[in-house]
Length: 71
Image 1 (tube, rainbow, N blue to C red):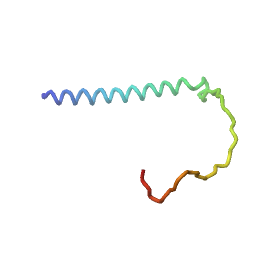
Image 2: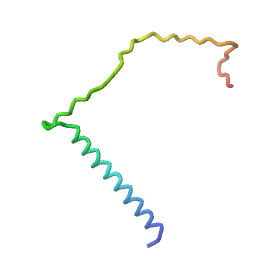
Image 3: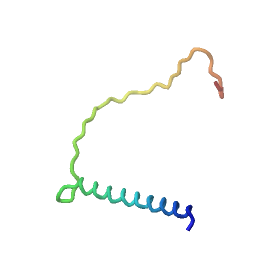
Image 4: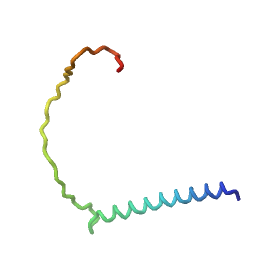
């Protein structure tokens, strides 16, 4: 068997192992986030209430602005 084939095989196997590990790790993480009855646990969050404000679409420049102008 050529050395190149061995390298390709190792890369494919390691990539497949990485994908399998990520799938099993995510399943365990999802199972940990549920309580005993199977429902998702509640999460405590902190937030800030902000006010909406109108956005003025005005542009003030010194000089001139031409269409399709490049700098």
